[in-house]
Image (cartoon, rainbow, N blue to C red; front, top):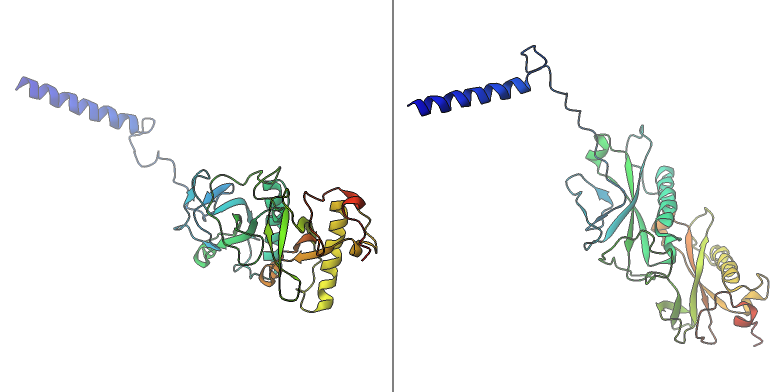
Length: 296
């Protein structure tokens, strides 16, 4: 009996001590000394994290970052903000969305260490859902994905490892020497990446930034793209950018699709094409000896 009483006293003292520790500084009122819980704010995703799947619209329920060392398909390289007073998510071709893409373009290039178009990469802009926008979310997320090819019909690649600095040096993602596959008319239908040590007839030379004009629809509209890529070839190889350039080699231009053009993507991938011969090794910096004027 004495033992039971002793345990009861100890329990009462322990509870009293606990309550005393929770009480305020001597006023005995437990309701006025807790720090106020901050009000819930709008959801904003993080930059520099990876995600399992591609999404153009991101909800809080679907937001589940994964370790970049694990398999994933998306890496968020930056998170920016639309104007706070904007009433609705901007349409794809709007000035605000194009501004977001331009910022993402700059951020993605800095993130990977070179123009992201120099690799098998695709940049997209993800935005909040309509309910998220209503609750105050005004962010946009800059997402990079690895793709199977820089040509048409590319698919997203499930990868491991971060893309940070991925193009700062040699990389299996980087575009380089290519072998053309021709269509029935003799033009280039598609380009297949090959090791520069093997015989090939094409090479990626860089990205030309097209001016802000409508997507090319007529032959005349394509002329500036070809001229821009020819100048890119001249700088890459180290030959004069003059009237003789078209007698040294041909050019393949790969602009973004019409949908991407509408949201502000103006980066045109440029390729040197040797329609009459094949070479071994890169032509970068080889000068006139590497890309001589063709006499016939």
